[in-house]
Image (cartoon, rainbow, N blue to C red; front, side):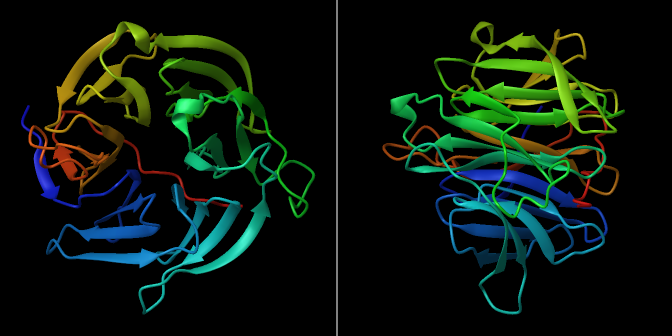
Amino acid sequence: MQAELILDARNGTGESPVWNLREQALYWVDIPARTLNRWSAADGSTRAWLAPEMIACVARYDGSDTAWLAGLESGLFKVEITDGDTLQATALANVTHPTGNMRFNDGRCDRQGRFWAGTMVMDMAAATPAGKLYRFPEQHSTAADGLTPILEDLIIPNGLGFSPDGRTMYLSDSHPNAQLIWAFDYDTDTGTPHNRRLFVDMNNYPGRPDGAAVDEDGCYWICGNDAGQIHRFTPDGKLDRSLTVPVKKPAMCAFGGPGLDTLFVTSIRPGGDLSDQPLAGGVFALRPGVKGLEEPTFRG
């Protein structure tokens, strides 16, 4: 299956693609550039807005095309698109990181509209298990005094996803020392994961587990970072197929298009010689023959 380049974005770390069905537009972030980006399917036009800190993950505010919940470096913010080139940011919940040089990483809403996001130490070589997974809003709290982690001891939390009925939560640790994907039973009433179990050991497949998406059949799509592949696993953890993109580091995938049957993929542009992957950092589209689900919005 041929991957179509929709934008030679040259993102340092393109992440968190979200399709706005009403606008027929794809949004995503470039973490080191601190930008929220938009691509319009109608005319191919693009826009970018600058955040006050590195912006790693976003979810649309319910009912809005201009307001987003975002995981930055110091906490969770409401960021709003303005007429200019800068996002208007309002702090919602701070996080007390256990060590320096940390930021948020992967994040998304569950089917009920709660926002989940993980943190990581930016120095991957340190392999520090200081990463934590947070839920917002918290139970019985306004989170004004800081978020309380739900899961701890992660190096690079990634691959968040929820089954179509919302009763299974997926999470990975994408660090080379881990490369594991877990599944949890998920209480949709309380937003509580339990019964953590190994879903896929990615050490047995090409690429490290990065960002993910879930299709309408309940299959889990995960970017194989470093391998230039996107893998589809059935709900019982069996590899169903692998698709290829012309870059080594696909970062996250999301379903979009008018029928939610296009798989958009963001990617990373590393330093060094890129003669074998000149399109690194680009945004790609694949037609996998299955449909996805509209991404839940943040309902607070």
